[in-house]
Image: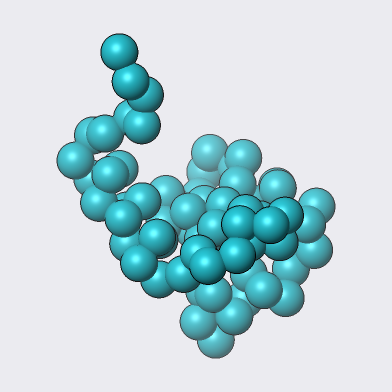
Length: 66
C-alpha cells in the first residue's frame, strides 16, 4: 500500500496525530499534512507537492520569510 493510499484511509484525528508525532520521519509527516490539507479544501495537492516539501526540508528551508 502506498503512503498516499494509507493516508487516505486514516481519520482526520489520526492524521493530526501523525503530523505532530516527532518520532516519525519527515516524509510520513509530509504525507499526513498533504492529506489533511486536501480534506479541508486544499484540493489539487499531490505527488509534486509532497516532493517539493521533501526538497524544502532537505535543503534546510524553513518556509519563513524575513
